[in-house]
Length: 611
Ligand code: M6R
Image (cartoon, rainbow, N blue to C red; front, side, top):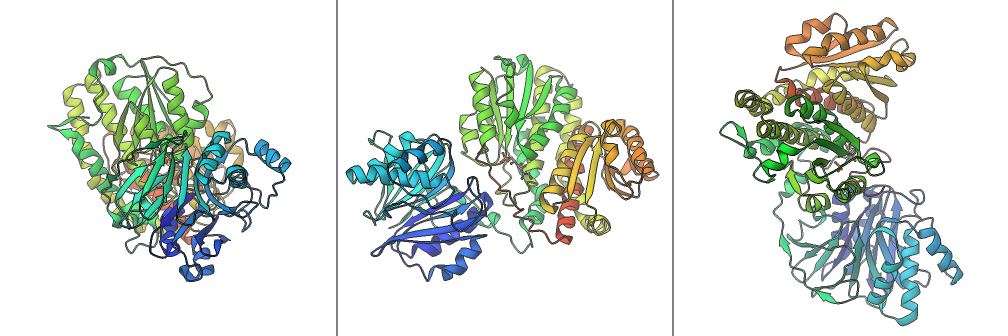
C-alpha cells in the first residue's frame, strides 16, 4: 500500500507534500517522511506514526526549506513501523533518495548482490534495495534516469517509486510497475502522487504513468520515457472532482459522514440506470446474446466487497436463475477455477486497485472468462482492464471501514440481477417492475433507518463492553452477518465472528457463555423462525440476543430477543441494503464508546495493494 507524493516548482515543497500525504493517509499511516533536494544536498525528515507526527517534527515545513521534494506515508510490509524503516530511504553513498509503494519480491537476492558489492543497509525494508540498486548503476555511469531504468529491469514485484538524485536537484524521477502513480501538471510546477486525491487542490490536469514508464518531472515540464528510454507523449486529462466530498464537513469521523451519505449515494448509483420502469445498463454494453448464454457467475472481491458478493450470489441464483459462486479474490487466483467463454466473473472493488482482485481478474481473463467490474474509482486498473465496468458513483470513501461502497456495490448487483433476469426471461416484466419501484424507494427507507440512529447508539451503550460478539443469519442474512461482524471487529477491536445460523450447533456454540452477545440477523421473512430458533439455542446457554429484523416481523422475533432493531419492509432482493445500516451504526457507536481511532484502525489501510 503506502502513499507517495512529490512536488517540484517555485513554492516550498514540504507544506504541499504534507497536505498531499494527509489526503493519502488512507493508504497507510504507520509512519511518514519527506526528503527535499536543495543547495545543501538531500535532507530527510521522518517519523513513526501519523502524518501529524511528521508535521510536528518539520514544523509544518518551516524546518525543511526546498522547492523539490518527495514524501511518503507507510503501511509496513518489510520491517516494523519504526523511524528507521520509514521512507524516504537514502542510498549508501548518499546521492539517491527513494519513496516506494509496493513490494520488491526478489529483494533478498538483490540485497545479497548489493552486499557483495559493498553496500551497507540501515533498515529492514525492501525499499533500501531499490535505492541502493539505483545508486549501484548510477556509480557506473553517472546517469540517474538510466540507472532507474536498469534497476527497474532487475526488480520483481510491484513498485511505484519517487526518486531524488543529489546531482539533479531540479527534478524528480518516477517509475512504476503494478502500483499506481499519477502525474499532476501545474502552472510552473509539477507533481507526482499515488492518487489524484493528493493533487486536486493543486491541479486537475493529470496523467497516469503506465507500467515500466519513467517520468522526469521538473518545474518546467514532464518528460516520459518507455523502458528503453525512448520519449513518449502523455496527454493530461482533466479530473472533475468535488474536493469537499473528501473532507469531513464538520463530522467527527469520515465513517459517520459516509454512513449518512448512503441514501444519496444509492440514488446516484441507481437513478441513471432506470428508465421507464426498466433497468438499462447503457454504460456497460453487455450483448444480449452473451447474457443469455452465461452458464456460471463467479463473484470475486476482498473483505467487504466479497460480502457484497455473498449477498449477490443468492439474488443471481434466485431471480436470474444463473448458478453463482462467491470466492475471495485471494483464493480465486490460485484455485484453478473451471472457466470457459460462458463464465462471467464479476470483480467488486471500491478502489479498483486491490492486488488480489486485479490478479483474480487477470486469471479469469487468462482462462477465457469475460470480466465485469463493479468499481468506485474511475480509471483504476480494474476498471481499465475489465471487459465491462459499472461504476458505483459513490464519491470518495475515505474511512478505511467501507460503508457507502458496500451499499452502492450492492445496488449495482441488484441492477445486474434484474437486467439478467429480464434478458433471460427469468422474471416477468411485472415482477421486474415491482422490484424496480422498490429500488427507487430504497433511499427513503434507508433514510428512515439512519434517522433512528440514536436508538442504535443507545444499544451500543448497552453492549460496548462485550469482548466476544457473534453474528448469525441464514441466506442473505448470513451475508449481512459477515459484513456486520467485519465492520465491528475492524473498528472496535472486539473479537467477533459470523456464522450461518444453522452451523452454530456444529461447533461455535461451545464458545457461548453467560453474557455472550449474539446478534441475530433475521430480515429474510422465509427463514426468520429458523434463525430465531438457533438464537434461542444460544440464549439457553447464556447468550444475550440482539435481533435485527423488519417492522412486519418484529413481534415474531421479540420473544427470543433482549432487544430488537427494526428496518422497514422491502422486497426480499433488497433487504441487505436496509439490514446493513444498523450493523454499520452499531459498529460505529461501539467503537466510539471504546475510544478507537475509527477512521484509521490499527494495522489496516484503505487500498490493499500487496498480496
Ligand atoms: O478497494 P476494495 O473494495 O477492493 O477493498 C477491499 C477490502 O480491502 C475492503 O473492503 C476492506 O475489507 C474494508 N476495510 C472493509 O471495511
